[in-house]
Image (cartoon, rainbow, N blue to C red; front, side):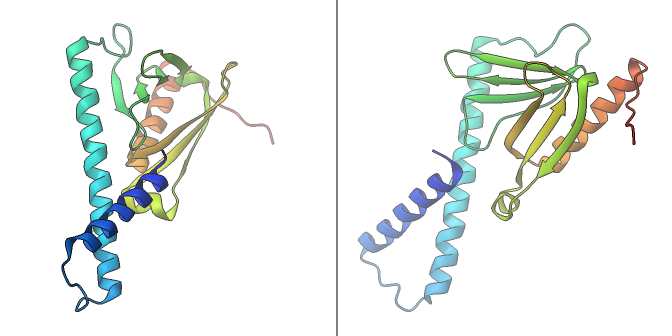
Length: 180
């Protein structure tokens, strides 16, 4: 289920519960009721996402999952798509890692020095939740383009990744040149 589907289902459930309550809301203008239902829906989605995050953190701690990288590699950012438990995004000082799957795991790594371009996109709805997509284009053979979908605070994630790429290029003495 995607975010729009979840939002529609929660909103419908709130309206059903209002109708079943037997309370008279005829004094409240419909626009005001619509605004209250939308606010309640958004709050419910945010709370659900926070709960999923807590469950995932508890699972990691109980399984004693090791850090993302090797010695000397630092985790700069770690996140997941909004309302998702099956995908994890990790940015370290050396690579970008996407881990997909709940029972089985599929892991894709892209070394920072292979990244060519980073783009950020937010729809109006995503801006309301402070969510967005980060698209990464690289010279990686297996997946030259990966996308971080519906991440929280995408501007910060974009900046963390951009700085990490610049730092990795500087560390290895690499520069990127375009021919015109």
